[in-house]
Image (cartoon, rainbow, N blue to C red; front, side, top):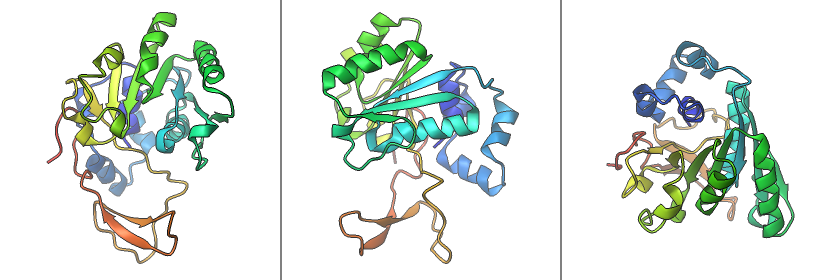
Length: 235
C-alpha cells in the first residue's frame, strides 16, 4: 500500500507524483533499500501532530491496518472502530470492536468523531452527509471495497458526491467512477506476512492458505498487481 499517497490525501497535498506512485514503484524503492521513513523525509515533511484519523469500519481488516502503519511510519494518531457482529474473524489490529446494537454504535462514532481531524469511512457512504452536516470542517474520505460500489457509481452518487476524497481498493472499481477516484491497493501486514526461504519470488504472486482447508495451499496470480494508481481501468 502507498502510505505516502494516503498521507498526502489526509493533508490535502496531493501531487501528480503521488498519483503516479504504484505498487511497482514501492517495490523498486524497497529493492533500493529505501525505507518508508527515508522516502517521507525526502519528499513530504509531515509534522507528527498534524492530524488525528478515525477509521470507521474495518472491511477485511484494512481500516485497522492502515491506522497501525500510518501511525508507525508517519506519526499520525489513528483509531479504527467496528461492530463485533461484522467482525467474525477478529481482524482488528488497531482500534476497538464494540459489541453493541447498530443505533448505539452509530451514536458512539458520531460522538467520537468530534476529536478527529479526518474521518476515513470504509464503505459506509450513507454516513457522509451526516458527518458533513455535523462537522463541516472535517475532511471526509470514502474508501470503497468491492461490491458496495462495483457497477453502482450512478445509483450511489447521492452518497459519495459530498466526500472530499474517494478511494477504491481494486482498479476494476474505477470503471464508471468519478475522475477524482484514486486506486490504492490494500495493505499487507508486514508483521504477519514474511518471506519464505526457498519460495518462488515471481512478481505478482503470493502464497495463499485457504482458511477453510488448512492443508491446501497454492500460489495465486494477482491480475491487478500491475494496476496503476489514479483514474484508469485495468488492462
